[in-house]
Image (cartoon, rainbow, N blue to C red; front, side, top):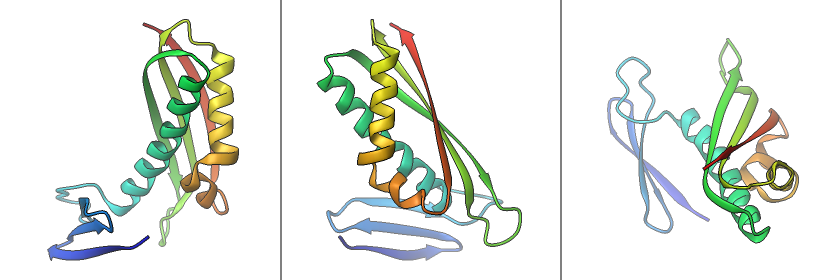
Amino acid sequence: MKASVNWVANETFIGESESGHQVIMDGNSQDSKAPSPMEMVLMSVGACSSVDVVSILKKSKQQVTGVKVELSTERREEAPRYFTKIHLHFVATGKAISIKHLERAVTLSADKYCSVALMLEKSVEITHSSEVVEA
């Protein structure tokens, strides 16, 4: 896998993946025009885990119509301000979704499938919680 990041202006950069997809990032915390690199990391762990959770729920024949993950973090106060904790709260919406199936999907993602979380857990405490909302 390859990618490039090009400086546009001020603290704004455009990242481009090997597959040709682009994303704007901004390191300016005062007048931000796009997500910061750390926000991108946080959203990446949420997206990676969500892909797994949705796939596992569908394979489990759960009638899922929506999955949202709410992410929260703690960071070091001093530089470098990396994450020390990340919490993922999954909210699955649908008809008669089993909380046990959702919790199993979250656990499988965390322990076996989500490359981003598995990479980050070497230095970040990652926790999870789950909630089912009837559609």
